[in-house]
Image (cartoon, rainbow, N blue to C red):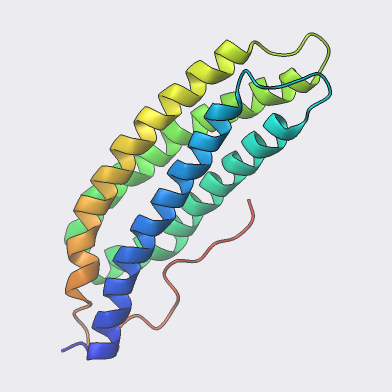
Length: 163
């Protein structure tokens, strides 16, 4: 039986996951609202966009290497769900690569089409919303239920590292 401390820790993970997703939503909304406001020589769009792309990449790497690995270890029945989430990360990563490319082009001569960046960000927002909602629904119950072994999770499960 898991200790109350471990159960509290895993319930806190569910809340932390939701809070992390809300922060990423907020950051994306800020980047999207900055499109079209860019003035000559203004690098804030580039900075915010690249920072957002890095934040989302780090978040997904942390999930895959920490949270997802720990969940599958404790709950092998979640392996298909985790595999779907990892596949989603791959799709999102491809969009992020395109956003980075367009954003970097916008810093060069002629710049990238702001509308093209906007379309990529709109698509990203839609996929992120679907992905985050599914992830929260699919994993919250497992996180809130606690772990099944007596030792609990001894390693951090929300690890983040630079890409």
